[in-house]
Image (cartoon, rainbow, N blue to C red; front, side, top):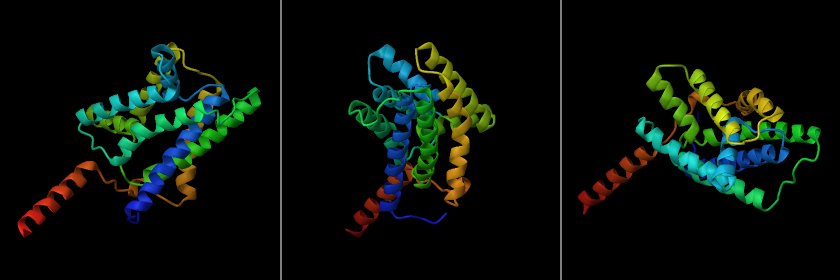
Amino acid sequence: MKKMNVFLRLVRLFGGLGLFTFGICLTVQANVGLGPWDAFHQGISKNAGITFGQASIMVSVILVIINILLGEKIGWGTLADMACVGLFVDLILFNHILPPARTMIWGILMVCAGVLLMGFAVYLYVSSALGCGPRDGLMVGLAKKTNRSAGLVRSCMELIVLAVGYLLGGSVGIGTVIYALGIGFSIQLAFKICKSEIREIEHRFISEDIKWLKATIQKKYREN
């Protein structure tokens, strides 16, 4: 994959996060069931008396800490994901930018549109090459620690958070099934249309920027 300048990376990162957030809000307002993580966030928000977005941020912070403990590298995109998605979700929901679905058919169409948007959002976000999201980082870290495939680990993660989310009162229904069956296809379609290969993307991590900054400061110090 060709290297991009910082501005283009940031445009892709925040464009992807914004699009992903809009996709989440579509599935929330569809009222026919959420994806596993969003059902989990909704369940937490109901029981903890906090907003959906605040629950998402809280979970992301915990996951980032776990990822660091597992030895996974963190990128600026990881931190942006952690902070911005929850804020954007609350901004859209609180301002009633998206009306709720009034019929089952309309709700299903909203979920399908949301899943499709999230697929292209993942492409934009990942192609910025600024680090994995908190949930993707956890999948990679656990796969390494357990010596299991990433697919198996991700499936187990999704089932666990879905079960907990359901027990906490999160919305589970036909929309959940559509999400589970469609999100992988949507992401694959986005990468195919944009003629990009996810395995060729080389991420830049915060640790690399810290090393670069230290080297720059030391060089300046020696010159003076």
